[in-house]
Image (tube, rainbow, N blue to C red):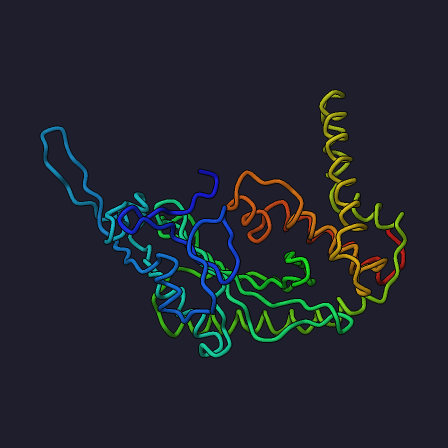
Length: 341
């Protein structure tokens, strides 16, 4: 099951919802209007409670000993165990707390929950929410501002919140790298309302700063002309592994990798020049268009093992995000120097 969405047998429903558009293999619920927190929890099948309990150790004589430093978590509606080797300091953060985190960002005013769901047995959840306003590139190209949040109930990771702009016209995620300002914030598991609000304000601060900077950067790039030859070179630099990677392989493997890489670059180049969404004045023949070609390739062209793999690759530090960050860095250098060298 490549999608890995949780299926709730009693409800006969996948734990996922989206607004207006089907996603994740057409599974889950599609609704017409943006829901509030309570409704989003229900539509996504996230309205369950997670409980932490100590593990039991059974001796050979049948005696059971309650552990003082080893715990497990389970969901009360299905009884499914979500995590089995948790420490005593691990704090359960309920799904309701994750949505409350979003509501705390702008007091619930203007936040639009667009997708949410649970993976596996419900041990990992994710939420995407659209923020008010747009980044406008050359007045015609709109980039929406999103917050993504994921957390787990099995001890595999902290809460992660990330700001990511998404270009409406082709729905590709524009991963970024603005100096030392990250677009992602990692938050430890806590039910402390004060800390939740403090972290929410930190995320909003990141979003506001990046939004303002990207407005200027993207509009500048939309005015920088770039030749087709330089577009091809930019794609090659952004998508190619280090030369040492190929050099360290045996000749047959290096040749195979080189052929595979060339095919990827050719596909990304063709997408950059020919995709209908790339024909706006802000993208056609511009540095902004070249950058969109690379991010759009990973979002709209590249094949993935499944929807979860695609989400991890694009949003949570996988290959697509790494390559997009490389492309962002190269584009900034080209805008400053006019050269890819």
